[in-house]
Image (cartoon, rainbow, N blue to C red; front, side):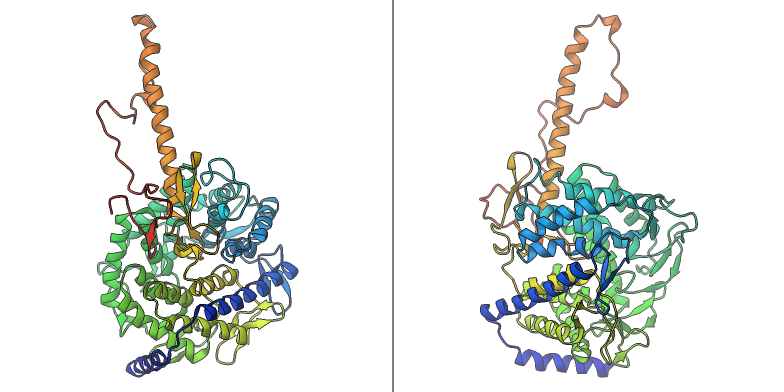
Length: 563
């Protein structure tokens, strides 16, 4: 194992010594190249594949993959606004409202539909205030894209109707869960809902979604081993682990991601405590020389000394927690693999320093680019920009076709596969663009969408979009301030109704003869209205009272009022 590790460190030291500084003009030029990449792929999809889910870039046609939702269009919608294309954002938002129907007889992945469809519609809804669209009164607590997201999520809820609360992996959008559906699903398929479902609940006032996501998280948390690890696949009915390999890659990755990002977005210490407990076990049992291996979840013995490309999100996640030294060293290892092949193979043998048989492909995944974006934002080190430029040039040289960009079937000889995943436009291009635009509004800056803040809520009483956006695992940004804005107004409206109810009851009862006075119904016997002399407890995150130009966050962390 030492040889590839030493080689990785040597490559990094040499590249770091020669790393160039990017001027504003050079960064702008790279952004323009990334724009061109996006529109080459996007226009190819519209011209050759719409309304199918995905583009087939070698045959210039389309195919349905995840449910026949015009998935690429939903996934790419917020990227249009990230690039500043308000006109096309408005056109596509209207088109989706007219053409997408979730009441269809289709078996859909609960996990993929949530992160791509529900997440994409939620993000587009929350960014609509920057698009120039006419907004409904009370936005962001109402709107057509929000209703679409809610409709899609409702179709997923039958999957959560299990004895444990952990969801099935597949659901029929019209008929619910098939009686023959397997109860075995991956860990990420259980623990990757809290961002989208909590956002839905707090925007709409319907707690059903957040409750379902939290019940699944709680059940999964209780299944960890005595040494604090979780496996890869679990039977959601019996709670027995079917695959007991523990790691941070495929089948597990976004579970850990959502504990951290859920803790930040919802200011939830319990979620952060869960992740920190897992992280201690991960560091103790799976980390070797800043690589992360796969181990047996009960014993901690190594089962697979491989690096999976999906693990490349980990340095970015660590940077959100301030673990920059560890994150940088792990990124160095992953970057050395990229340089070896011009991309990250799905599996890479750490001991042999080469690809794993039948896992040589690179479907243009975004995870290492995502980590580069977070690390550059945290450190300002232009080495991450150099990686970003390497990624742009690799994708252009290896994957570009006349009809878009194709997944790489084999990185050893750069054979291509006839598929362009929707996440290429949702994540890969978006993270590349944001890496080279540190002043973008999604980073808390003032470019890429006009002002760095917006008014929202009833009577425009909330400050939105001032920073602290949380990206779901499909790179769809969610605004924590909007969630609080809507949940606060819902709470205040409920309190007002209770106060009016409590004031009206005594007067109506006093006008009746004592013999005719009836006890109030049990559902109204208790009120959450404030009692005389009682003070209202302020919510943990409120719209800032500072001038509107004040920042709501630093490096993605949303701060409460008492900070």
